[in-house]
Image 1: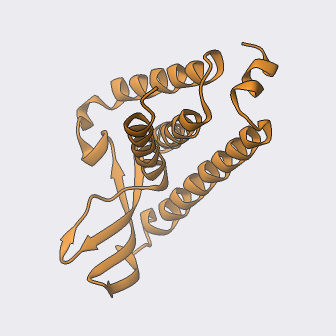
Image 2: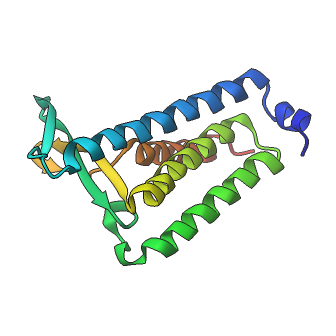
Length: 171
């Protein structure tokens, strides 16, 4: 598919650039936040376990922390770190091929872009640090939720948007 054909996939080609720039900002913010956490929490002189952002806001606590994750979601398959990296790379390559070689409607392009950007953020972590850095910790009414990062949030948002598109766009 040529560039003009890709642009025709979007009703407004400028939306393509807005989406790409937005995803670039998301990736940069994800990498920057994890780098800061790595430097701030992981040093030998660091005696900080987490930084509380807020406490007891409608029963919800939020903190910035540092948790190395060598596996997939919730640390699953941690002993399969490098096969997981290969799967992540293949997934990104497949989704990029889908975006640029197929006629993808705008409603599906943004969710797929979010998934790609999130996966790239976690791939870069694995290549740079040897593991994915999870930093966001929410506690809901006394129960801790899994620690995650912005890349994980992008992947989740992309998947949720794809499900919504599939449910409401039946044609």
